[in-house]
Amino acid sequence: MIPTQEIIRTGEMRVEGRFVDASNATLFAQCVIGEDKVAVIYKPVAGERPLWDFPDGNLAQRELAAYLLSESLELHLVPFTIVREGPFGVGMVQEWIEIDEELDIVELAQGQSERMRDLAIFDAIINNTDRKFGHILPTAGGEVFGCDHGVTFHEDPKLRTVLWQFSKMELSEREVALLLRAKMVAHELLRELITESEILALQKRIDSLIAEGTFPEPSEEWPPVPWPPF
Image (tube, rainbow, N blue to C red; front, side):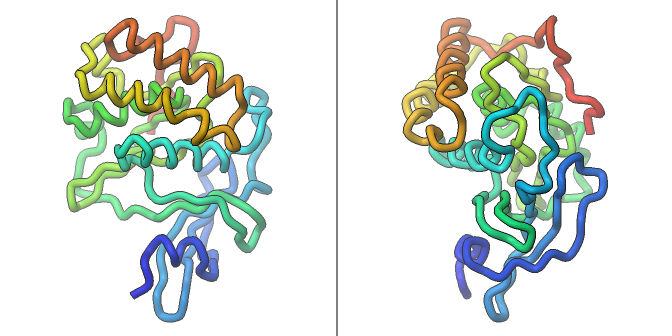
């Protein structure tokens, strides 16, 4: 059997459908090599709608940046993600995650598990402006992933999330170590995907989090929860 990641990287991509509720072109596809195939989400750059507050680069690069940072921190929160050529041009391609439909996603997301803490601190690092309940992917095997990281890494504070239950909670030693690691690797890891000013802002966010010693609080100047939250 060919490894899943190799199939996603090099397999023929066959688009099978489109998610019509998505604001940008979001396609369901299969990457195929011979008899082996892997389901993926494909977001072609050509299908991105321009955003006034994200003028640099493209959303696909930000999705890849989130994946690479998650892997570098050994959090493994983001499904395998690459940017590659597809039927409608270059775009973000991410492994499809089958979620456990029997789980109550709101109950899970509002819980106190370490996995949710990891997702909350990760969102604070990447300045995620769109952490909805529907962007949290629990599997039947007990794993939890996050998806839709296109609107991240902005240099201005824009954190919007449904995971505010950790607000003001003290950071653990492990979480502080994660923050320090993120600051250390950010420039080399992300310099070709986001701007220099966005990397500097990320490092300043980390300094602020460490200085405060707690999870961030909701902003009084920016809507703290994405709408709709699902």
